[in-house]
Length: 380
Image (cartoon, rainbow, N blue to C red; front, side, top):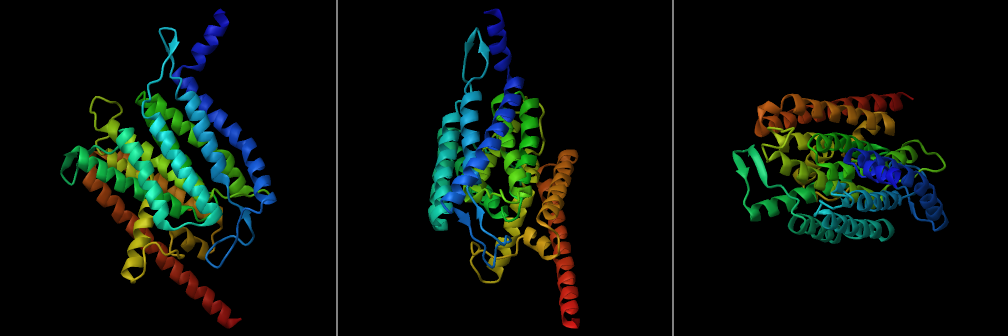
């Protein structure tokens, strides 16, 4: 009896739950993905290549199913059992049901889009509903700008509206960046490590468990997606939308905690730091939408102007392009961490400036590379 109690005591200790969440999610998805691939092949559920896509043969596209199943099942088990309190197991994450509800709504609309292709308007409506549940029912939202543009604490209505807008942008930025092998997964794994480490340091164990669960679920997917030959799989809109929603949750909670000065560690420029964590999808979406609108087109019309497309056109492979972008992402995170004392406005402005310079440089090298290739072909 004593040994059984010790097992449960250690199992439900926060630091152990983080490790268990990571391992269980990783093992779960490692075994789930081959099953999903076999089902996709037998039912012919493929992402078929076209002139805009970067793959040359049909690939199963239901990787988001395994990610969702791992996140929800492990989170509900390990987050909902928070520890020993007077000998009993208690739950302290009251926002868990709204979070799971949001994940589930996003999962179904993403799955429907992967299977049937639905309009952007319908996806936006469901994204809005999922975020509304998270923000209003779960009370997970941006409530303080920490001095960005001179703004500090937000009124409830402004907080809800800003959070809805930010959440929509984050979700769709992750959806748009999922264009080459490993990129969306790598950015998400990096973000989970950063936010998960913060939540551990801040004793916010429930969100640390959520971060560890997402990280664990993504590692097997990354291996199959980035290195799979006959057993390759894509996460589809299901996966990218789920990751976008997950990062809306993590970013909102990160900034809620940083708005409380007594919570340690404390970032003076919390919003700017969280922006640095997701700067690759966020800035690329801003840049591409701006170009599309400037040229008189719809911001939602797909093209090959994304930064990962530019790198591919310059001759880099999928994994090389992913590595380049991840290294830049790490650089921005390090910059935001060490220069946090600059404050939100200065930090965001400087990061946008640097990202703009890097984008211009990439476009310049892309143009030079294209001219060289064209001249070579003419000579031939």
